Length: 315
Image (tube, rainbow, N blue to C red; front, side, top):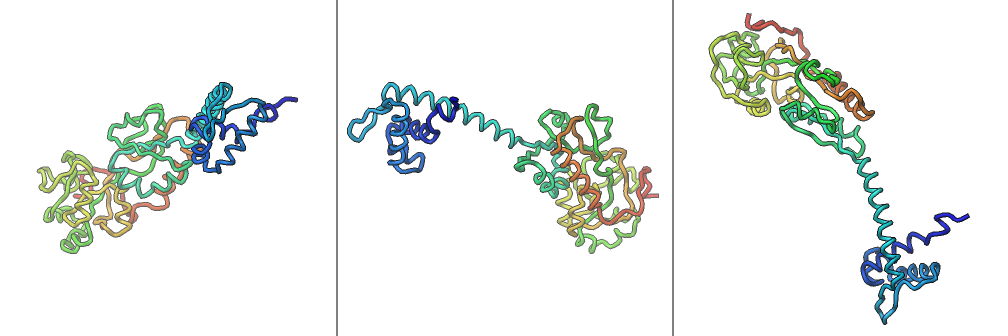
């Protein structure tokens, strides 16, 4: 019975011959393959003996392809190229990138401390973070999962798994608190005597100092378009800020900032992991790891009360 193994020359011999034909000699072929020149010569000689045809014409120390040799070199090159492309496609599939969509602030302050939980569950650790404040960018089919703030009904056609509440409370650095100890009094008016750091929200918004203190006039203080910049200033001791619970979990744990009240304000929206309706085992493993990380490491200290009514703290 004729098989590929019995009808075709040895692969090593064909590889050595193709390298010699392409490089125009036995010596450069040996250098490319990192073997002895005599080994290349032996492979070519064995190939010629098996095929009963001259593949090279010898001219002193030079070798020149014969017509038969040229034809065989092209066939081997095409065949090996087909094999190489197939292998590359298979390897590329194994290394398929796992895309995670996330707004920049949430990515830096909540996801990055957990990046190892994602990468360790993705084959070959091929994770790409897609940063955007436009959630429609996360609806693309190549996005495995995304982190979003809102409600499940905002994302029809997707599955939303809750991470944590949209929860705010005041924080500052230990050094700032040492200069303003009255901030621990739980009295909203105490914050009127210190520098307040603001995000660019509206006064009536749940995450504004005006809403927290229950005051109608616009309060003074630096304003930031993102929470990351505001928290940098907070950690540096240059003011008190209203912090999102999930955003500052790591900073609280490390003692970079301290929580100033036992109470919180809740938004009607929450933070979710959003995936397609059909998910792979890898996606499910990453979602579980991120959800479990919230359950194992809730924001510190634990809340004694959750307040959602407007101005509840200031009354």
